Image (cartoon, rainbow, N blue to C red; front, side, top):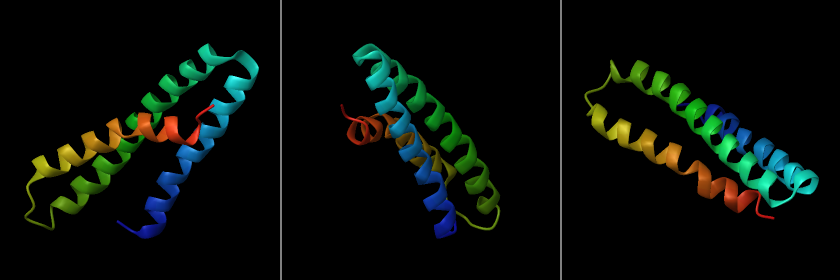
Length: 90
């Protein structure tokens, strides 16, 4: 996977962290946690679908076990919540 693609996919998290902070300023802690939950879910689905398509297209040229890729995708999806908590902590 090219480095610029990874940088572009990672940059979406910063946009959501800014939205999280704005939600906290406008609506308090409940709005912050609602924005956190919604954004983490959206980011996880987006990243898993996008990376799954890329990994599966590259799998036909290699002999790696796809179960390892599935665990990596699960880790990426689960890692969105701590990353958003860290970036958008109010």
